Amino acid sequence: MERKIKVVQYGVGKMSVYTMRYVYEKGAEIVGAIDVNPAVIGKDIGEIMGTENKGIKVVSLDDAENMMKETKPDIAIVTTMSLLSDVEDALMLCAKLGINAITTCEEAFYPMNSNPVATKKIDEMAKQTGCTITGSGYQDIYWGQLISSIAGSTHKITKIKGSSSYNVEDYGIALAQAHGAGLTLEEFDKQVASVDRISDEERQSMIDKGEYLPSYMWNVNGWLCAKLGLTVKSQTQKTVPQTHTEDIESSTLGMTVKAGTATGMSAVVTTQTEEGIIIESECIGKVYSKDDFDKNEWTVIGEPNTTLVINRPSTVELTCATVVNRIPDVINSKAGYVPTEEMGELNYVSYLGRF
Image 1: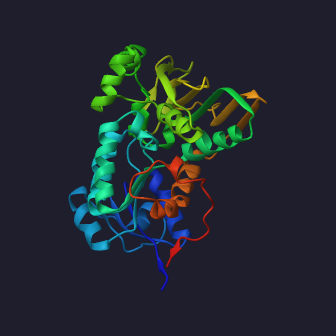
Image 2: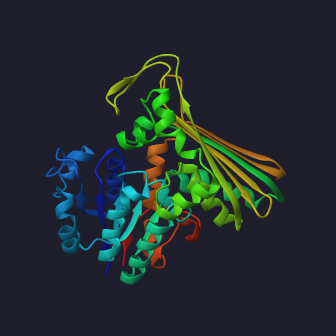
Image 3: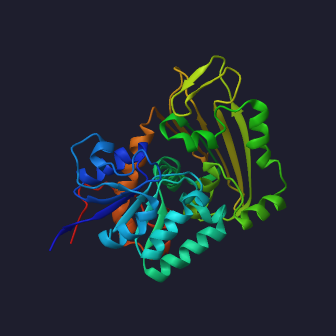
């Protein structure tokens, strides 16, 4: 007998408006929602989505475990924070309960190269309970699959160079703050840039302890190397502030970002591989001025050279659609912490019904 896939939404901020709607429109159902914000706890998710009531109220974190035990979801969509350490408790709860989980957390895309301790902990628990945990989103396609597909049509590669920009206003205050938006240049240097002025040995020590703060491309480069069968020899990261000549209002930060202060950051990650291929990727996240727009540009250099440019991608919607379309892959995957590079190509899903 056919039944709908049951989904729990973990985090009901900006991204969940899309993920929940997409879940419903694909034929699945939301059976529970979780948040820590007192302003939304107790609200019907229909109010969050801007639709009619769905009969599902947002519960607090304290009630999350009991709710998931009662509803027995097939999968949880976690749309909260950007670092694995910030979503570790959520993913561990899902793993403990044997509930599959997919998160938009950027570090979770390939966390084994930045926080192996937490990744192993989640992996071991998920294997014990027979569920799958993974990270996905915009990077799954636009920094991952598209690039590996171009590489697959190239005879010889010497370098892969990528750059992607996005408006931190679209993703909530936690992400904006993680990018240093609103800081003075002195504050940015102390709080953000200084993290990367360390030796390779110091960086590895921080990674081993789960204390490293990777930019998004740190994990993307790891994903690409795994997907392309490349062996990482060394990897470095450098962050620099972005500024603007005029004041910019930030509704997410609730402040005016003054001219000359940090609107966000650019992070460049350079990976040297044993095969001689260099991957140099840059992500630029900042509070946009009226002239800025999202752009994704990658070049595979070799024989032949190929450049892919996508202007004005709908990054938020693409992130959420990718996550929802990945749901069957996660449900059908092996148990453990499984990066999407092991799940095969992402395909369009018209219906999330399940027998």
